[in-house]
Image 1 (tube, each protein chain N blue to C red):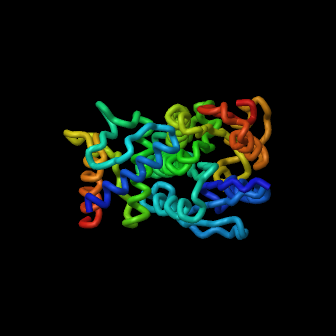
Image 2: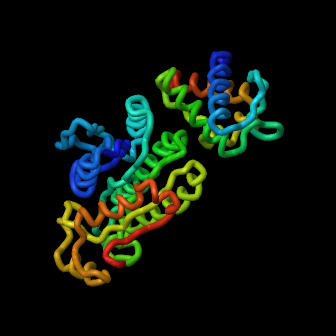
Image 3: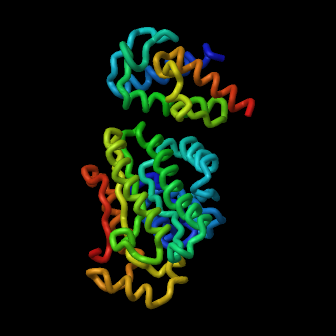
Length: 232
Length: 100
């Protein structure tokens, strides 16, 4: 069994919940978080209620991780929110909220995780982007901009953290049956799928497979990369 | 307070030096140069030391103190110059956190 310590953000539902269960099944000690309480119960799972963009809350979470686990091997920066809005109809408050959760949240977790990882000269950080960045998808300007920023963060931090044995990569899923896309009209999703090389919705195991690859100890020479699903 | 911090930073420096194979003098004190001319650490080792000291402060005083924010980087004389200057800066930040 693999006893790695793996922190996953946004584990209450969707991809985050699936990844938490996936790595628990592999023997990892999993730390999860979300703004609200989670249903997941497991003797190797610990949940924190925290807003990923709240610096003090995030620092408290990491202080507890340092105290109770003494190390961190993997960070999966999954927490994210979307906003499906034409730019002309997007309130600035929405832009701030999307940026706070998707960019500031990913940044805070990566920064604090790297502080823990650097001591052991080993770490894996996986961020979440979206194929919508590569496709310049219309109707999601704020969301796409926030994820483009996450990709830039991925590449720069990959360089900054290489010396500490920490890799930083990103996975860009296509639409997957989760809450994030449930609110999106069916024809919008069909249009998006039509722009993929492989024309189907993604599945949770499709995402876990790419994350597995980034987390493998053998992937130590892979950093600063973005892998999109669906052949985008 | 500052004496206590000098000891804490000296211990963190010694631990880091052992981990990273950096040569340091037998005794470390407030005058030991950390960074810059005649300093023991390169920039990456300094990053590791600052993190270690921040964590040690958090463990001991239960407050999150940032020793590498814009304020620290814009000080007229660098807080990273010696163990003594870093201890003085940490003491100042600790006091500010407690007062705030």
